[in-house]
Image (cartoon, rainbow, N blue to C red; front, side, top):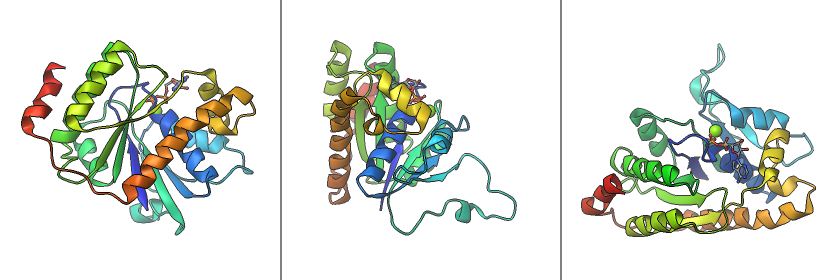
Length: 236
Ligand SMILES: Nc1ncnc2c1ncn2[C@@H]1O[C@H](COP(=O)(O)OP(=O)(O)O)[C@@H](O)[C@H]1O
Ligand SMILES: [Mg+2]
């Protein structure tokens, strides 16, 4: 079982879009999939409520809420035995303690980032936090970036990629900016489940993400980065 957490303290960068798109894609590929929602705004939970019954199933856990009366936390958090992927959506403005908790409970951290200069700066800061506060490297976590709402490398994105290269963090997919994601979000669907023919081309990005996840199941993380490299995040 692989635990995947979608995180970035920046709001609106596509955490819920990545979590729900990936969950529906994994499920469509026949993998037992669970979707954990740690965001009080409950966007992922609402998406799952809209999901039609006839679509490949996803087990949902509203982890932001305390367990119902008479139910233990561990019962609330249980997943079906055939679960292969647990995908976790997280809130914006995530605090230090919560970063630490989420990193402790995951194998993979996926970080969506928009190609704007502001988003790239705050993402560099966030990466510094998950390395220093979350100790993601010494805890052997796999980190990857998903460039969202773009298909092309902007100048700012190229700068981010150079920074990521120095930290050995890959950009594993470029997600196109398209209204299809908005439409799919409203209907509890993944983009690959829409009727629109031109949504097919967007499916490839999710196939790449899943391939990368499969590769992580069988590999271990390299050496911890030098503190000197981490410091660069302050000046990015
Ligand atoms: N690739 C995309 N193309 C078009 N709209 C997108 C894309 N990714 C996200 N959005 C839209 O941007 C808004 C914010 O995305 P969301 O996934 O909710 O971000 P977050 O969970 O990080 O706050 C939503 O309305 C969503 O539908
Ligand atoms: Mg969200």
